[in-house]
Length: 103
Image (cartoon, rainbow, N blue to C red; front, side):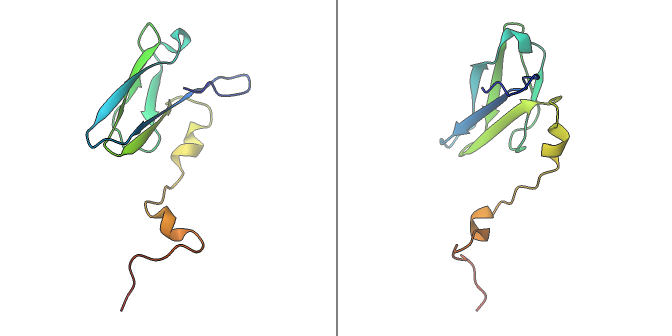
């Protein structure tokens, strides 16, 4: 869990799963965050994580993927929601070999 920067501390939670099953990670994000609702920026996990009264949240993650969780009301969140993530980003890099070719 990161704490952001500047005068407003937003916070970000990242969960990485190298396993083959869905799982979750219970994390302490701070008592001051109770009631905050986090959503997965990558949208691999549906729904939201609501931070409990003691400052804990249960952050789910799918198999062999990651979850990037941010407060749904974070300043600038709307800018992040507009980003497009390319599923084949590695094929777009300079010098990357194309795995499929027309013959």
